[in-house]
Length: 289
Picture 1 (cartoon, rainbow, N blue to C red):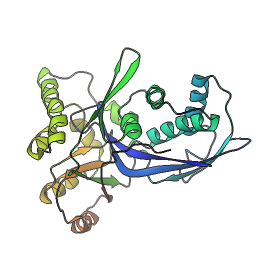
Picture 2: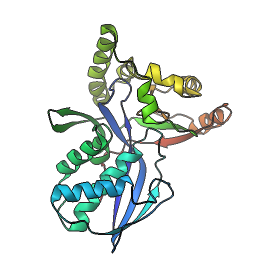
Picture 3: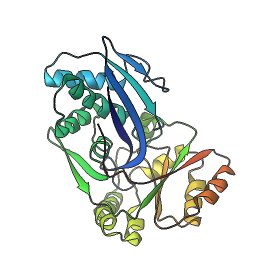
Picture 4: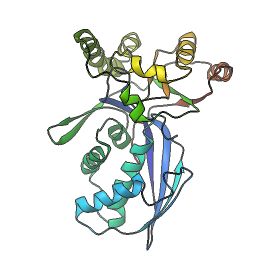
């Protein structure tokens, strides 16, 4: 038996649409043992079947390795809420790939894990931080997926404001325009250029400026009930800034120093729209196996 522990991820970081991502201290854990068939046990409905992302990722990896699949029994402890913009699917994909290597007795090639996972997901912005930890910039060059790890100052803390409703990525994609003005594109290029350097140096004034966007958030926030209420509260409590995690609906807040999270949580509970507050840190290690 062995265990795989994969962190939740938060993509876009506002200005870095489909590019930036970071890993946070919220995890899905997969306990695995060899079996004569495939058995999956977890609280999420999309896990308790033989058409789930864990298995399909495992089978894809077996084909990549040109090996015959071996049956497994997988017990999944899901602490990452699904369909909330926190990379739950990425944890399943990454775990399924690593699972294949370990069950087959082959040394894990982490760069191949990244490329297989990116191919399955279709984009690398969630799988990169899940695998490598910390903050990443990832992209596709021709047929190859690449990533760059951003050295983020460890003074920064993350707060996830997770609503009790789901938002499909497809719906969030559909509200985006097909074209953007030159001014909006330049605006995002400026912020996306600023964000990595300011995060590394710990220049919070510039991090605040970089946490602005004109590509996706102005369109998606209208799908999220209570968005303005959460943002207003974070401003009141002294957060550096907020951004939509992935396609939403989770809202991430970045802060440093001491903030009275207990009082903030009390104020959140008085809002019309129900949100749960998760105090988190950046996970700098990535998937463990």
